[in-house]
Image (cartoon, rainbow, N blue to C red):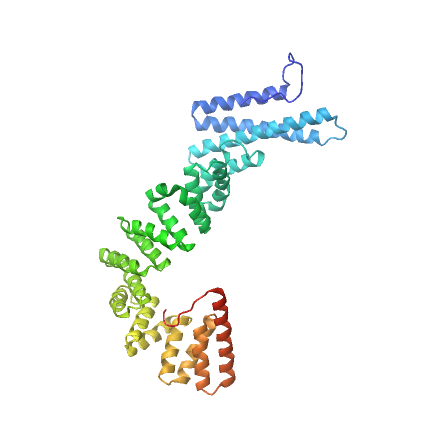
Length: 404
């Protein structure tokens, strides 16, 4: 990089001392880069940026002088622009050398300084985005790499990092859009394939998500990753595929926590409580104190008319976790069905307090109040039920009183 002369001068006139000194450091920086030694580049870039910063400060100060002749002002502005380019290139070189030494935090700081002086420096925003990505600073990598991909849509590596960054900041729609053009590359790595499927699932693109999940589920994956893949089927509500996925995981890893629970819970969602019960009982043997397993087993038992054991489990759940709204609701509902109104009401009241937006809880509570002769309270709960029901109808929300 050669620094153009800052002032107009006859052809025979030599550059001023400041320009000569700066050009010497620019040449030294180029020589250091050609050496391939990051330490030399760091030393040379630091000297270059220190001097360029001093000269930029002096030039900016000179520009603030009053009554500057137009030609002189134009020369100073041109000089300042050149110094900004020198500073940006110098900090970019400095950061690149640090990145080669895996000093990513320092590298990112110098790339950010380079951006301040001139974001258009070739390769700068790509370097900045890559360093931020390696540091798991995903908001910053997403910001930088969005610019890179907009300028070069065919930069697959940058697009991959951008898609993963967007996934990690939960911008799932944008993540899915960026995975799409690099689908083959994304499928080669389990992490990116999972992130793509998850992003599709969270943006209601279930069909394509399930195709990717099917591919992942057939791979030889570590058990914890296999679990995440199976859970994605539940995210897309593809319960029919989720069950064999969880069952295979449980068979291959019989003592793995939550594998049998996930299989049982999914069977409950499929309205197959009889099939769910053995899975949930197996999970309880592995994790006897697991509240969610106890609750799902209680629900499955209620669905298969095994009320006594179910009630015992529900009482255990709320003893451990009093704010478990569904356990409180189910217990209150069963007690109400048995005519034990005084016992039912406190449980339904707690459920309504913990989960005030579930219409069916208010409905059961109004029934209990009405049977207890508390007409005013019953009317209040009925009004709440109708209000929430109307809101859910308008927003498309659905609440199923028969499922956990």
